[in-house]
Amino acid sequence: MNFYQQSLYRDFEKFLSDTISKKSSCVIITIPGLGVSYFIKKFLSRSKLKNINYIFKEKEKVETFNILDLNFDKNEEALNWADEYFENASVEQKFALIINTPWILKSQEYKTSFLSSHIFSSLFFSARDLRDTSIFAKEINQKLDEEQIKNIFDLSGGIGRLIKFFAIRTDLLESKIEDMLKGNSDLLKLMIPTIEVIEQCDDSTLSELKIRKEGMFVSQLFDDYFKEHTRKTGLDISIGPDLTFSENGRENSNKLNRIESRIIEFALSNGGLVQKEKVADFKWGEGSYDKYSDQAITKTIQRLRKKLMFHNIEVVSGVGYKLVIKN
Image 1 (cartoon, rainbow, N blue to C red):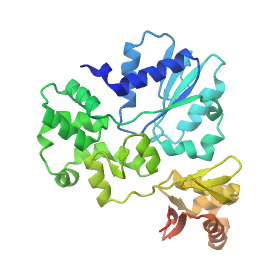
Image 2: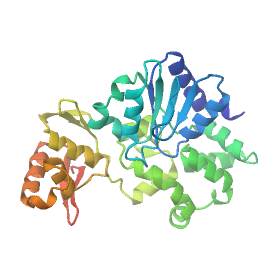
Image 3: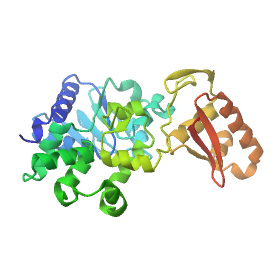
């Protein structure tokens, strides 16, 4: 079997082809390491469709259909760039937007963006199952036997970047996970971009992406890693356009003001952390921290803290505050 026989690829190809044929725009939700960029390149090399453009930076030429792969995890301006593409496009020009930081879809910045009202469908680009892992791993190393492939799936959890790593480094397949996590810098370097995004995703999103199942990470590597390193957030707060909000999927009877909304949105995109300087920026304008007292900032945080049911805001000495799950 070849690459194109993966069920994950067939679903991806069908979704993208349908979107193009319907002349609409879509969002593809994923996290770093799953391999969506590789799938895009494979789709483009196989597709007979014309006037499709693959864009990975700002101010590129726009075709009839465009795939925007802007590395949201590395680029703070990615949403602004994407919004500009959508806003400046003609009626005939459509987009597939790749977002590899899923939490941004719950942010006020996304909800009030021009593009959010022009997205008509979505797809979760997930980790591979065992069959697809086998197809992909054998594309890289045809000498793999079934036991090795099972080990690769157990270790990788179907995450493309790790499948490729272990298909090449078969010498590690019999190593202890503890030894790999502590002693293999190349492996850790591969895992870090995925770890940083996972830490800010709620469990429902990770389940949709087939990263977690029944309360555990599908990848033994990630499951062991997060047993030793507690996820930083797992925060789940969604803010509506009218500043009503929900926590853990449950509507909160309180309502945020604009400043409180910006504080929470920043925390959700920054591992829960909010510096005092940022609170001052949101409240009085950029660069205003030295003009106002810490007491005024403290009162702002205290009022926000009282509105939260399932989350808390802790003081972080020398930094500011951290949004955490309430014990």
